[in-house]
Image (cartoon, rainbow, N blue to C red; front, side):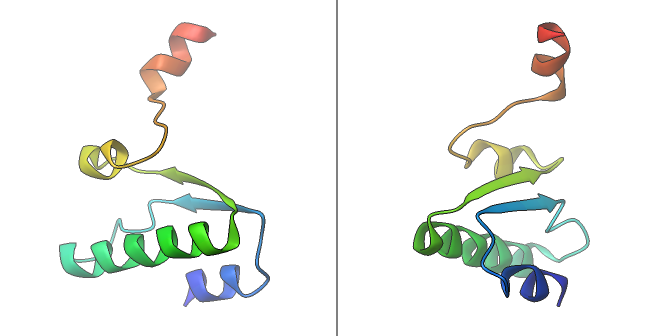
Length: 72
């Protein structure tokens, strides 16, 4: 429901903090698929935080906390 409310206003920037964190794998995949489709259709930017390396690996760009700490 929170995702639907956030997308209702068609934001140019979508911040998603562990959007699949408390979901079973199947539902989590459905949510990610939906978010990616919306991202393509709306041509918006999505910043997604995850602890799941498979989700991170499927991203267009990926930064880890380790990489960010080296830049500081």
